[in-house]
Amino acid sequence: MALGEWLKHAFAVDDGPLKPTPEQAALVEKLAVEVVRRGMGTPAVAFLGMSEPLNYVTAQAIHFFTPMISALVETNAHRTLADFLEHRGAIEYICQAIEREQQRTRG
Image (cartoon, rainbow, N blue to C red; front, side):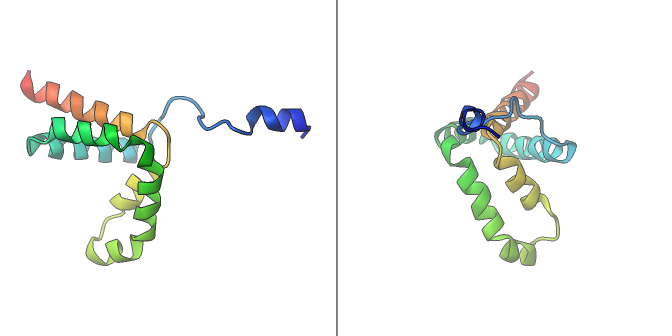
């Protein structure tokens, strides 16, 4: 690969809009339902919006604590969530899911 071609893509960080896997989408929907059911939709969206730049760091922390989490829970939901958070747009996707759930429960 020529240097010019490499430089053109050297700082590319986004592959386009986020397309979660069906497993990730189901997990986010379940998370949104639980957040809204507890009446924490608005605070959750505000918190997620403030912490959006840290989504990759959060994903790495989940991966780091996987051995301890696996000892406590039997599902792989934490791995699915960590893999999802590694992508740009994950926080926005979660916020939109929470907002959709809030609209659904109001209407």
